[in-house]
Image (tube, rainbow, N blue to C red; front, side):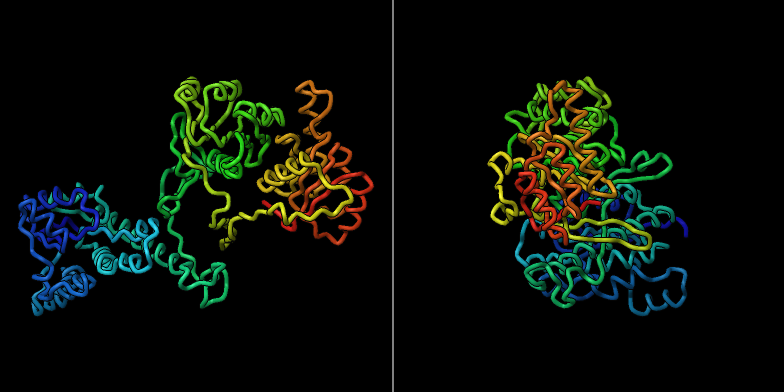
Length: 534
């Protein structure tokens, strides 16, 4: 493969950005321009000589433009191997001219879906001729250059291409068509017209398509992964309007690491549970919340969250559900913090953080909807586990009182708060809460009893550090992400001072656990739903 002089170029783009300038540059190098529809008009309006695709093929565009480039004079000109005598003979016999450059970008399928277009409009924005030309040109990259992105126009504007460039452009082109086809396949897989109301694919009667095309876009190469010897990168979801940490704007601070992204995501997902609630602050360390609180003001919430576990909060990740104000920023700046994310931040808050050069401030805009649909994925050796997001919520009316004593209004509020936090704590999870703040969090233990004990110990330690007479677990509500398999875990909560328990229920020993709760004078609620998080 050698340097190829461009003698004829086919230009057909949906996004007209930069196409006139490219056409002018190519024409200046004597390149013959062939084009279609709106692209041809844009080039002609700029004073360039353009051959319509219908002149090249001898057929008019038809069927509302669905058929225009699907013709041997187009694909023969793209696919012919220029040093193959038989191919050259076929070109001569059928009057097929070589095409050395194709510039194509595709119909805006994803944008059309994202704006909520009707199904017919979505279908019309499935490009056929464009991907066909892209693939033909990319396959024959030994002789043909394919450009699919306006940022690459300058690379071919000089009127010739070398082998290395054509290979790079072909690789990018196939990545584009793979992503494009994945978006279409996934739309079909979960399109209401072809699925049951719960999103079950009608033809297969299973929740998931037989083949799951994935096409995420490279956004950033990270310094390293969880550990320095691992490589890492950030890829963003190929969904227009996607909202999350990956789409946040970094205002200041050094580049985010793999662990920063992971922890910031955990913090954002949890604080989003309170997006319609009072000012709330979440502090996360190693993907587990170590302090969560709501308050009258953001600074009140921050101070209450910090009090839960000030040791773990050092070097942690903070997420808030309100625009960050200067007073709260000053309080946060008193200890080392890796990342703070907020829907917005005042100029005063930004100025405070500007003095902390390594602290990363992320502006997320509107918080994600915790009830949104979607999928969670995890790689395993040789495969991929995929599940629907844990967006399950238990309405108050579905809570089942199983003890003689009912909770007070405050106990119920604290129980629901603890239950929400427990959903985001690694299993086995135990969360004590009082007055809208976590009092102790036990996470990631191999048995529930140990989680209950650790959470109680953390609460006592927090009380000692704060100079409180008693830990906040006294009179608290406690949440367990799964049922208590034995009464011992519940008795550990009683020993810590909890007066209300919320748990899924469903153990074969429920009656034993209920009896222990009644004997201790606890109020206990069953949710019928668990929230394992591994």
